[in-house]
Length: 78
Image (tube, one colour):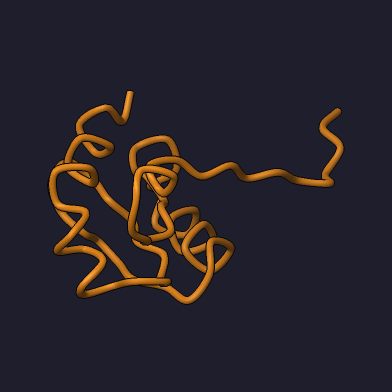
């Protein structure tokens, strides 16, 4: 799941960094659906639009270390 989005990010990282460095994008298939200031802003937008589980939320930056992002939460799930 989301392999297509990750591969798109890797293949187009240089262009994405030129346009969106330091910003957070929402990717679906091979399309940038939105650009945001923070991961939480992008997450809440995706949630509002019913896109969670269908999109990749990714902070844009140069280098291989920017291929992944980890999100943690202090929320407790019952």
